[in-house]
Image (cartoon, rainbow, N blue to C red):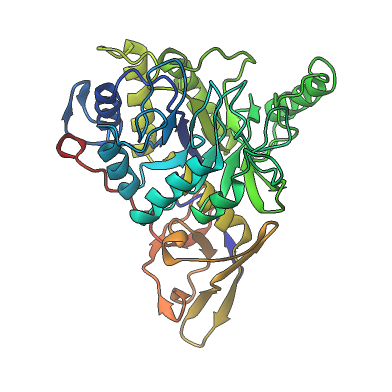
Length: 409
């Protein structure tokens, strides 16, 4: 039997995550109202909930000149009224991203703040798989090989990246962006042209820029060795297809998810993480076009054209899908796909959990019944009809996250 893994869970044609940084969120109530609208199916301030899967990020501390949503009040160990909301979304998986340990626009980061954050995460048995650098200027806790990034340099006072391993961080964003709609897309003239253009601009117009303007190539994940020798995955985020970005607030978010972009993502059969601050300038009423675009996204998700997931779930699926080790055991009356529990990839060897297998879809023939086995246990599977390739497949179901009731936290 010929065996292979489908690019996306059956019958999806592409995959998308919306990665929102917590910067300048308008208020805790607007944060809750919008998250309810995006993720629940109940009555919300903005209308009936869309029942999508869209995550968010958080800070522990705030040392800036502006009010920000954070777990603690400024640089103290006193919890804010927003802390219970953060904890609730930690538990559900809808906050899976730490946008640095805090907003340190005024400077002042010390390793002790990372240790305080780690202590809280351990207290609540929380793992945060995604780290996203925050800020310019004095946010020296950033990690990466660009100016002002010292968080992974052991001899620097801002060093903390070893603690990221302790919170379960596997994926980092240092600032690299793309204007290509869909990474790891099938090659077509549009993708080839945009990839070539980004490479050319990086070598010419932006050759003296010491910030991560463009990523070379069109790959979502890249293995990277940090300054302390830890290996992690670095990922890129999509801004827009035209080459300019402002503050990436709720109004720019309208254009980032317009239907033409969603349809192009489907056509390109790509995987993509959108970079936004959709809680910024979020006011009493949502832009009318945003509601239209979100409803179109809902339709495409319901049709199973687009797999929409939180950033960590999307990245984990892609990592597992590309580096999974498995074998086929052909028996007289049935076949078995046996999945190994160790994942060997460019950043090392990881132990696979059963929850990591969600969405994996194997192409098979149907001459014999087939089961999927993991750790000597038969997995729950579904037999799928032929997709656009004409091939039949068997899949481990992709399960939705359960969204919490934030109004009663």
